[in-house]
Image (tube, rainbow, N blue to C red):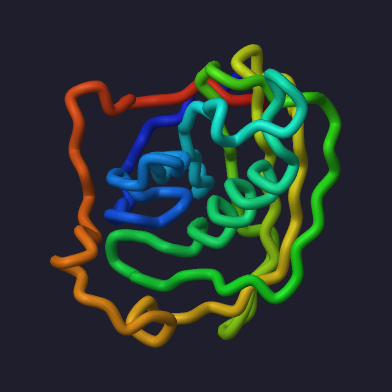
Length: 171
């Protein structure tokens, strides 16, 4: 395990399924940029996100992995987003409900217009439950969606309990 410092926190929105803080059935994930270039998201799956009793739905696992990898290109300086061109995943272990979970996403290769990224959904003991990989088109946020940043509450939501670092498996 290696400790990685949080360099920045990314924006959340009002109603996004993944990051929407007012979406009652959403994941309410938070996203943090780390000192090694990776992005980590934190969330807790709830009953609304289940497939088999007590287990998170595989489609929700795909959603949070895709979102985290696609956001790996976004920094405070560059409001770029990864628009998914192709995505695949491998389910390794069941993902429980009601426990804090983390997803780590990274850029593996990139060109001027696109990137290939990968990610892992980690259980509380750092066991890899799901792996994902995708290809993404780099797009400025304003070209993806025409929305009112203020009205959609697209903001960095600073919270008292924001972590300063994470212990993660080595790359």
